[in-house]
Image 1 (cartoon, rainbow over the protein chains, first blue to last red):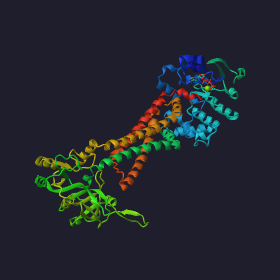
Image 2: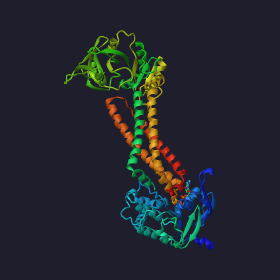
Image 3: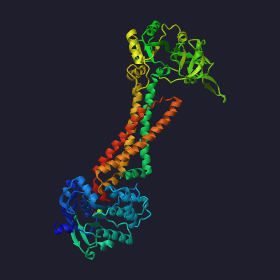
Image 4: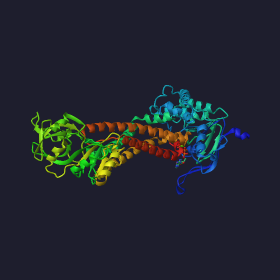
Length: 242
Length: 396
Ligand SMILES: Nc1ncnc2c1ncn2[C@@H]1O[C@H](COP(=O)(O)OP(=O)(O)OP(=O)(O)O)[C@@H](O)[C@H]1O
Ligand SMILES: [Mg+2]
């Protein structure tokens, strides 16, 4: 393995993603190239509609781009069939969706157990691990309740617990702190950052929330469907549109 | 995951209630409609049930039990001499008008049975004794008929009302007195009126010089001779037609008079068609309702299945989750619906109206249909989930 293979977690290069019909086309990604390193927490920022969520979907393999390639931990996603891609996601990915997508008819802990159960873990083990992570996100005592009985911020924390519970190598978060207050947001980001601190791991966070920029190792700016700039220091960002 | 699948199903009580309502209502509709259908069809061969004998012999032209073509009295002797016949008794059946004491006329089914053997006598008498039929001018009336032909009187509230006929009451058949010496319990018939039993010889009197009165012969095979076997011999030796008396729909043989009666009504009357359409309608409505409710359940959960899929659940797992949900709902829905159908059926049987015959086969068929509906709904759900764009879960 080259040195590069040891350092790169995610690489998207020359990605085009269009939606709609040819005569009524929305360009979401245009020759977008993006790279995330192992052991880092990288943030994606940019104005609404610039393609952040689309880029995350392409990285997660839930969207197949019209052009370009995506590589996650050395695996080219376009080499995988539908079922292989699903298995790859099951093993390697954790998600925090922009709309939390918690299952309202299941209890908090059952929601958190889903990724482990999908992996085929025994029920008891899944239960114990879910309980531990629920405690970490500060929702101890709420595990038997329904997500709908929780506040928006609490629901977001359940979504984060669900994304972290199976300790996925690649964690993808779309606006993980949008509904959280400053302190809770910081606490959650610490959890997320801790997860990234391993050479087998990587975290990609889409956010508008400048209060959490300090948790980023690097920040990638997006504009009109492509990465326009990558900075190491949040102070260098043009934050006027955020 | 299957535990979670069940929890998803049971998690929303309101939706679950809707789903179970739809499924159980359609199961009820299907089971109830077909039971009533078979109940009504079973009325066509009621005489087979009420007049009990192992073998029936009729004129060769007879096609069904309500259409008696009289035999010659000498035929009785010919049948008696067939090898394997233990005994043969005459039977008269006809539809005649009976004149009630208040002057009203009622159509009755007159049944004349052999006074020596009482072959064909009703099984259950709630009042009186069968032997009293040997007394002059006597008849036995069935319970429902006794109520239908009831005596007009004045109730305690001063309003006219009718009370059922009882032992001791009289009416007239063709100006000849009929005195009730017994009340029996029998099955109601599709054609004709109440069953009025009397002796064969007296039936001749009641029908006033009808030239021939031998409608059927009731025959008992000797030990070791099966009814079907005996039928063959009788037909061969006498040229008459002989029938077995199986009335149980799923094991009646080619020779069953009940079966032939059933099919005669099936092919020659509009009854199966009109009731059959009601049954079919019940089936369609049932299928539509349960399919629709289950489908909307799937639709409402589509988003969550998509999320589970995005998180890496293969279609195999999701398919099994949907099957678990569909079959669980189907099972419970069937249980509730069949239970209700039973309860309603019991109430109907008590009232005797409309007729209700819930064969186990009807329940099995309903069960299969409900599970079939669940299966199809699950398949549709699986197709839906497999088509859903996993990326959609990322969008707001
Ligand atoms: N499935 C789709 N069909 C059609 N157009 C789409 C679809 N998904 C995204 N788009 C379009 O692609 C562009 C990029 O969308 P995307 O959701 O990636 O933006 P975003 O940067 O995540 O915005 P926000 O900050 O508001 O979440 C938008 O113009 C959007 O309307
Ligand atoms: Mg977005």
